Amino acid sequence: MLRGRKNVSTSEQTVRLDSERVVTVLAIGAVLMATVVDRPMCVQTTHAAEAESERDTPEAVRDMVLIPAGEFVMGTSADEVKQLATRYDVDPSLFLTESPQRKVKLKAFLIDRHPVTNTQYHEFLGATGYKSWKPHRRTKGRDHHPVTNVAWPDAVAYARWAGLRLPTQEEWEKAARGTDGRVYPWGND
Image 1 (tube, rainbow, N blue to C red):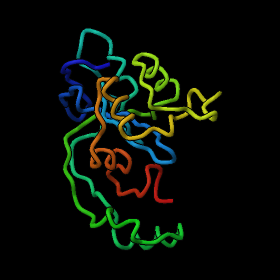
Image 2: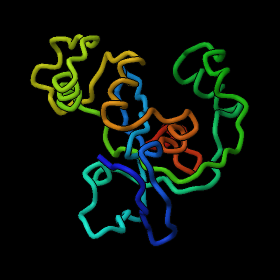
Image 3: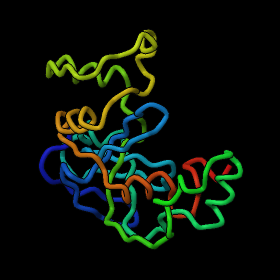
Image 4: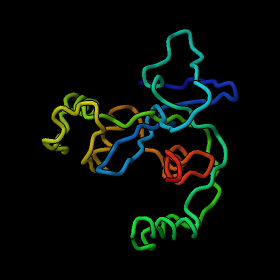
């Protein structure tokens, strides 16, 4: 885990990281929930981060992606709401919290490249004796699959154990959408 403060550089910028600026992602049911931990998660990155230290890169940073500082468009436009509601045959009011679209400016942060796995979550349970999570039989043989059926308080407990925190809604959306206006992390379809 990343401890204390450390400078991380890319060819474009240097950002000061501390244990509150990194994100790990937990799969909760069919919904992904980001957890700002000492690392980030992004679909797309153009420059690898290098730790400026005499030691090797901390384990927590090795599989994280730097999300650069700057503005992005957050939320969903009225046209996108209509398209999504039609495509998925759902009530458009489900998207009310996604409007209006707005520009949001964020500082750089890191996010995990991959969701937290069943194995990682089991390590947390074993190390802490935490009892809230009850894995389903479906986890058997799926050690490297994303952990599911984790309640919000359990995600918070995992993040604290890992020396991290859950990301803000803005951090998660910027990491998931990118800066090019994608509807989904993988594109618009």
